[in-house]
Amino acid sequence: MMTRSIAILLTATLGLSACGDSSLNPFRWFGGGRRAGPTTLEPDGGYAIGDRRQSFPHLLAARWEDVPEGRMLVVSGVAPTKGWWDVALVTEEVMPAGRLRAGPDGILRLRMVGSPPLPDQPEARMQADPRVDTITTALTITTPQLARLRGIVISGASNSLSVSR
Image (cartoon, rainbow, N blue to C red):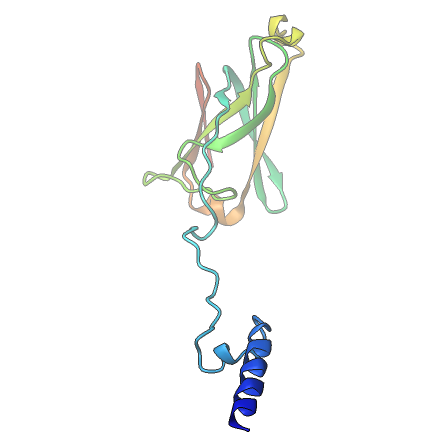
């Protein structure tokens, strides 16, 4: 009778232990099978991502445009060849996406960057005409972000522009 009880108990224990994450699993009854919460070393807001695009060759102008959430910084420039793409304004100091932080002097430093055409593309051999091949990009800066800024400096490969708040 004792052997039969032990066999039934052992069979039931093995059967219930197959329930894995279930509360029926006897190995979890006394805290042995606690689930660990997700652990990560990722900082709040994610990792900062470096930008591999090149500094834009020549900046022409920078201006402000009012938008409901703050102001939009609009910057235009011209490249030596046609075919530049993925042009954007990025911070000089690498920061997580969506974050803008001025330096201790209250100046936000940005770079206008872009990707040139691949060498084997026909655009790489076509001279750009500044009258029609001007490239414009913009960055929206919210009112709370603007409150912390004194000015903005935008740099390219050959020159830089500055605008006050």
